[in-house]
Length: 266
Image (cartoon, rainbow, N blue to C red; front, top):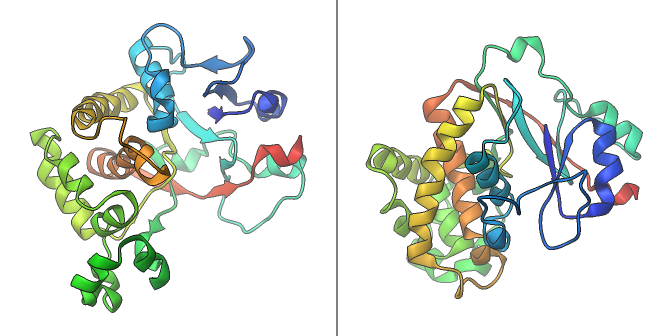
């Protein structure tokens, strides 16, 4: 399991979990960290791609040694062993509830994703704040949650029409299916967190994702991406595509994600 962090002071905590520490961003990380700045890399795009600069580095430099169950978590989002509602107040308790090994009963699956995030559950005030014009032109959105799809949500949060533009440059094999997915589904598996049983599955995903994001760069570039909702657009596109791709091509299941920032334990 790789645990991605932006803070060099998280090293000992991550090592104590048994995870592989991954350091991203501009801070100085010691040699005990896995970083994405060597060999073939896009680390300079971290502000736009987020954790996907590390995924690109793994893909291009073939640095995965594990033969099975390759997973990713973050310094403030962790996989839980089960769906209980336990809350933690210290690092020891956190370390006891997070996933360390894949249970035998999940071995029949190819991929583990996080619990679904329902985009149609937002308060009206948040939708209106982000795009009053769309809500005014489509008043039915106030009353019909089924119409508040992934496409609608992306338009609200990451620029109206941007998802459509991105879909136009997606490979022919997936373009229609992905378009149907975002226009019909009201939930996705968030945070760009997943666990793959085999390296081949992971690399097949990368081989579909990164060429698409490269084409998207020709549309959106970097210079005019202002504000978090737009600046991180490549990461947000990958997040939606991740849910679609793994559901289309693999046998998957879900596990819960626990939110706790390691900085609370420093």
